[in-house]
Amino acid sequence: MTDPAPSTVDAVIVGAGFGGMYMVHRLRKLGLTCRVFEAGTGVGGTWYWNRYPGARCDVESMQYSYAFDEHLQQDWSWSELFAGQPEILQYANYVADRLDLRPNIQFETRVTGAEFNAAEHRWTVRTDKGDVVTAQYCIMATGCLSTARKPDFPGMDLFKGQTYHTGHWPHEGVDLSGLRVAVIGTGSSAIQAIPVIAKAAKHLTVFQRTPNFSIPSRNGAMTPDYETHWKSAYPDHREAARMTPSGILRNPNDFSALDVSDNERLAILENRWASGGTSFMAAFNDLATNQTSNDHAAEFVRNKIRSMVNDPATAELLAPKGHPIGTKRICVDTNYFLTYNRDNVTLVDVSKAPIEAMTENGLRQGGNEHAFDAIVFATGFDAMTGTLTRIDIKGRDGETLANKWEAGPRTYLGLMTAGFPNMFLITGPGSPSVLSNMIVSIEQHVDWVAGCIAHMGARQLDCIEADPAAEDNWVLHVNEVAYKTLYPSANSWYMGANIPGKPQVFMPYIGGVGKYRETCDEIAAQGYTGFQLRPPVREAVAAE
Image 1 (spheres, rainbow, N blue to C red):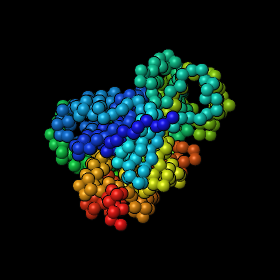
Image 2: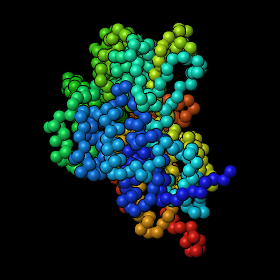
Image 3: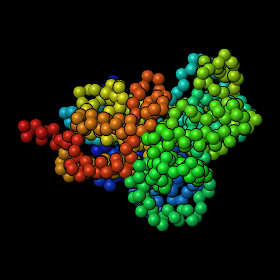
Image 4: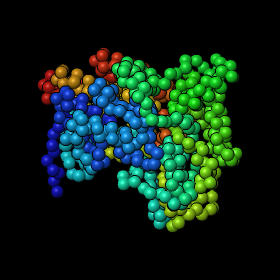
């Protein structure tokens, strides 16, 4: 059987989340043709898939939105300070319709392979629906948290009840009313879902291996005054956010936790706790770098947990002690710790007595049989690299991306990887990505890629590739910056520690959104230092 005749576009984009949608908009502005392949039935990326109870953004609504169109950001209104998944998905669909993006998107189609043809400087992309498309550029907008980590307990097929994964929640919803429910995992998704599930379930049992730090969100209705505060000066607010370390305006204090008295330190932490959200980590400027300062903040939160949870033994299990605060993704919650005061909620520690197997009626743990009607796996994602390495991506000389990244991801700026010309990564490993306001980082990456493609078109160049030496230097820099902080001391998904056998490498760039933007802009202004730009193959041969 022969392959279907390939169709031809200027760019193939993989993924129709916020990165893929904005990339379509920018490329069409350049007069280029593009085709998007999206596995889901709709746009929205992570907000399309993650529909678990309580799913909510941990960045304030007024900052978690596109900034590229003033009319767009003025016309949309949020109902809450921290938007829930349904409203964010509604926003994504609003943008797709307003910008008429859907004609470029082919839904329910998963990319299975992509191969670079060095003789033509073009990519051939294949899908599970039989599509074969050639394009000058292949742009991976696959997201950082897109491939759910599926549990591998023995006997997974034995359980006769219902199982769910927070990262692939049924779109028709799930009714857990009156059921005996287990939640396995206590990461960000679980911390959001557990309070909601507890209200519906007959009994909820939470299986925890590692407790996590979480700060109350203090979520509430969006007020007209707060909305006006942002919209009256949106361009100024956005520009300021772009130059912050996190891409979020959160009033950081530019002094150490050790520069103030014990009473002053406590007052500052109390104020941040009362305000809520991730701004807690901006209480002092050295919480990510100074162990003593971090210890003060960590113990403060542990004491808050102890004050909220009635049972002292349960409180101690919920109080994280194995990693500095913030070195695993800081969580934001609504009544998470208070949920453990409910009569219908039980916490089970599996750190020393792990889950042994699934059974017909539930699971076996620590030699004990637990019976359930439904089990929710909140077991996280194969973050940042998992989606990319599962696609059969072949670069120059047939090398696969999975093979190149076998010892950990290697990129230049998180934008490209040597040996894979004309393939761009949107918020790839080696960029701020998951340590930042993702939409700020997405817009910066898409704008940079669009600018690069325009630069090449104006100069009649058709191939760009990261220089191996520049990539080596960037990987070294990413690691040097990371190891000046406390982050690598935690067994986090930032390090790939949640995936058995995955290399332990700190994947995002912790140097800051603002500094990273300046670096990318400087490299572009200098003619794309560290990249090899080439004319069409026929012209290169003629010149020789």
